[in-house]
Image 1 (cartoon, rainbow, N blue to C red):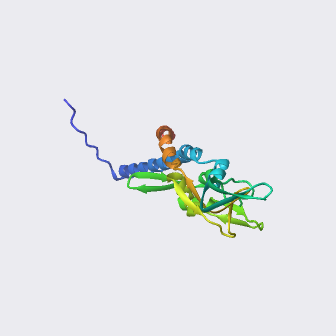
Image 2 (image 1 turned 30 degrees about the vertical axis):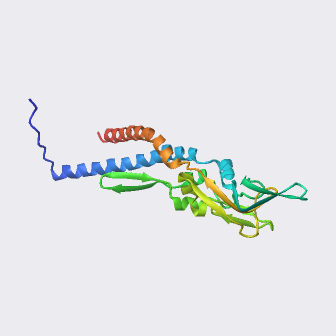
Image 3 (image 1 turned 180 degrees about the vertical axis):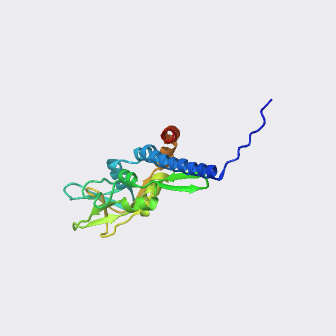
Length: 227
């Protein structure tokens, strides 16, 4: 037969000690979760983000639209109508002056902790903060350097979920997507990379193991120190 339930009454001092222990364990859990997000989840997301060279190609390439484009021969004696894909980062069309690469900006994004009841939450990926620090510059025909925030200041959302950006000339009648090619309008499209979604899912098993191990180590160390 099962034993009868035991009733333990805590003194006021005992209740205070129990509340203190709960707070300490909760604080340890918050710190361990933050370490796991920084050391396990964030690297998984960064590895799925485009590297600097891939980023340059992705943001430079697009499809010629509008009235099409003219492709000049090397001597410039004739012009051939051109449509379809075009755009390379060379020749001053993709400069990182004043902007960070997507991977580096994600690395600098802070882990934000929050609580709700007895639960602790951690997150990163502040889209506004990241979009303010990514983008690129381009050099005009006159030599000026202009800044742009691609995909209407929603680059990180477009990389995560897919997006389209229509580009038109700002300072001249033509875009210059690559050497010898001039266009009146281009449409740039990004596929959905899902770096935050896929990176988070891939990191979850390791994050759980890390938290279990670190919590056990921390609690054992504190309990042992108080004996």
